[in-house]
Length: 421
Ligand code: EPU
Image (cartoon, rainbow, N blue to C red):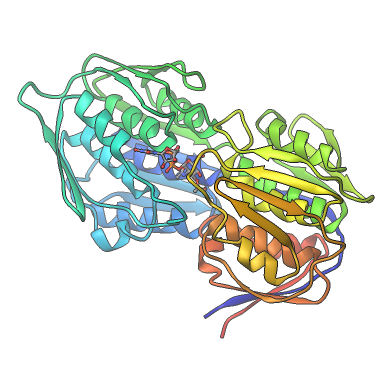
């Protein structure tokens, strides 16, 4: 199995360019199913989750070409298939967006339950609630979800989510775009990629308002036309590089970011001792002195993202004093990496949803295993900051979501390589 070898203890210096947002890309590519005509999508990250999704769409009959790196031209006009390849669907989480997109386009769908990073039980009851609210009949088995129009047909509806679920908000938006009438999603998620999906769909002719607030309104239209759209930069990838500089030290210009999306992360890294300078579409982060403890509680956007929990934990592990890290989006997300960090010398005590992290002077290289995408990113950061050599195993998890990780870190002066054995 391939793994990363990292010789740590070197500060990071230089410039890193952030790729397009994974979680926007995996919503926007299925959204192309709703479009009659060709979509040119720019700033598409070349990561394994995106490649799997493109294979699924390709097998369904979409015409996909990539005329230049990070640009995808996709035309789904000829697609007839409403049952995407189950084996591929099970390889990733966001394949569940095919349910909403197919329901919207064809009024029916038969989609395997998704796989992906299973760091917590990740139910989809809110997605189902949304489909029912749009008039669909839902037949859910252990392996599949089958959607068909209910007795009264599909029509817009008012759907109040029990929690602000990103996935359910996306799926309902996808389904409702071409369904007659007005759909109102209450308690909608507000993450930047929700706004990005709405902007993509509106560019192609949809009528969606309120994305980025608690209430999203979708007025169904008859059809969408082709067009060009560029995906936003990845908030979490940017945050990951910022956490890496905070943990390993150095001075890095993180470019192609939207600083507004980064506010909650920059505030916490500043509290810990990083110096941050915001520009229009870049952030400089400098860390030279000692790190200080802090308290972080993950929350839905605009709060501190759960997808940055593990990375900030590494910074806490190296900060003076005792930090507290509370997970409030998932029941817990600590098990994917805390034991691994402890094997590198971190001192972490977990009590329910809270980890208490007592800072240590240094971490030491070790062989550690990535159990999910962000846990893996955190272990890479730990390896960069640690003294000695770290081997990170199960890197396929990391490669789901970080484009050119080795190339980008090497350009910043890191000693990291991928061993293919
Ligand atoms: N939830 C339910 N029922 C549902 C849906 C969600 O109980 O039907 C619960 C979840 O168990 C969780 C909370 O609601 O406790 C929030 O889940 P959400 O639906 O918002 O998450 P998601 O759509 O499954 C997306 C990202 C995740 C990110 C979360 C939270 C994508 C493809 N995935 O997941 O990203 O952690 O939002 O921000 O957008 C990652 O990139 O590494 C990643 C895991």
